Amino acid sequence: MRIHFAVISALVTSSYFYSAWVAAQPAGKIIYALGATQLQDSAGKSQPARKGDAVAAGQTLVTQNGRMQVRFADGGFIVLHVLDHFV
Image 1 (cartoon, rainbow, N blue to C red):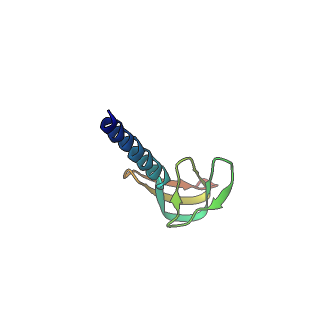
Image 2 (image 1 turned 120 degrees about the vertical axis):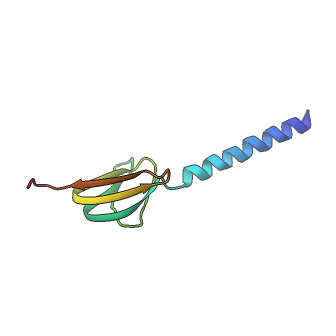
């Protein structure tokens, strides 16, 4: 019984640390930013978005007359292109 408990305990402990490690990894990375682009956290605090910045899960990508490209950890890719006027 002790051996089984130790094995289960070790598996639960290692999966807990793996989950924490995965949660700490960025959800994506900004590969291009031009103009008025920002990253906003869940509390509403904003910072300028720059090429190379990590994008965390829960952050909001904001553009105001700007462009941004983001590559996500799962291979996804998005392009945001917002202009404040129409041509």
